[in-house]
Image (cartoon, rainbow, N blue to C red):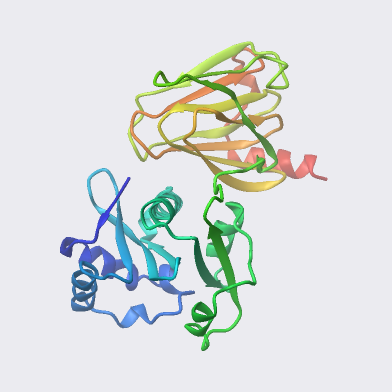
Length: 307
């Protein structure tokens, strides 16, 4: 995944999402009336736009997947916006685009805050922001509010300089842990964990998955009794977990971050970067009878355990 300037070749795929009812149904702008000429004009006007930054989110083959923006850049603030094609949804492109443009906002443009809003009817967007620990705010710049006087029932979010948008304590009720890491000046870092100390079980098996192409999904199973620690020592992997606490996702891209799974949990892993490595420390040896590979069977077990 990459960010780059919008290019004329992006216009057809930009028009695709503008005419996709599933993408635009809860957006405030009348995108359905846009034409290919409108897309080209927007792309060309973005090249020298000093007040707005519009970037293309692309895959490894440089195919356009969506647009992420900082709009109305002024006075140390900007308004964030993002939209991705349906093909890019649930594949990590939205989160990648958001992370990268917020880095630009604070590290390159030296902004103090970034704001954005969504309609409360747009439950897909609200679930996305809420699960990533963004919270509703009331202290919104006056000029930002004035741009939305004709819109009702909006939910506003913000990120301030210095906020860590990746801090999470749990995902679907599973504990997110910080693996002990010792940095060495100009010589990298050493990370380590110990059974029954950093993780709440003895380790009987360690395995890792490597050489996986970008965009590949793996997993699609749960365990009856097995406990595991999952972490990514190299690359970027989206981990999707589902259990009695619901269904949530987290990106594993920091070698010092791991997720401990101690209950029956369905898991899916999406490789966001080719050659990423997923490591697993398990509480028991491989037992085929401990696997649940049928989602319907898993759902029945979760419903039964949840009362």
